[in-house]
Image 1: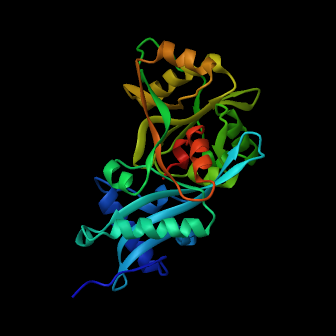
Image 2 (image 1 turned 30 degrees about the vertical axis):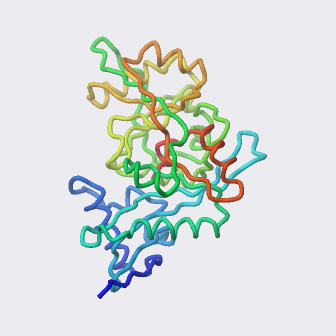
Length: 310
């Protein structure tokens, strides 16, 4: 007899526990020292379960995915697109090879259209699967590698206690990132929550008691040894700060993620001091709404910072 599946949002604490277990076992190589949901405080907490969609069989979670509506805003503040971020896509081993991910993606796309979403974004190495669903590589990023310098001296860069940050400082850091034509909207309250993700370190330097540079390293189980979000008002300090992070983390080197259309003043510094650099796809995206093609062009002109990816 054919199995009967239903698609819905989780509606009980037991479902939320099942989701955590499913994502932990299917998307992580080893046991976590924290609950999986702590890596995604905007999506998987008990108060945000409406962002989750599950395929159920006999009230058991067989598959899961998140759809996170966001706004992509032009630097002028006059134009915007509704973007849907998709992540945490997983199917329980006992239900694999039954087309559940196709069912999920079809459902998420219909849901996104009802929410007036113009385009979908996701991150995955299942290239063939998502190409069949209409997704294509969109945008480019550069990954710079910096090696430990045994002669380097630590700069006045400190590991920041995120609980001490004010809304003003959070806004200040967001404004210090390299200027892009398009950016995903992020509130200070969301920024504060994202900084609480386990294994996330924020390094800051200050000038006249104000933050002049910041660097975010690591994010849960991902991006360890990677500076995936950064900004500075003092570009002359860039390499001193990066070398200081390498010293303080006792790493042999770090990787720094940057947009392909990085301002030339930053490129000159990184190209001079990086041991290597590689260009990669930024994300996979699919137009779905009436403004979908224009939204895809905007995504390609943006940069999705590490804390915003799911």
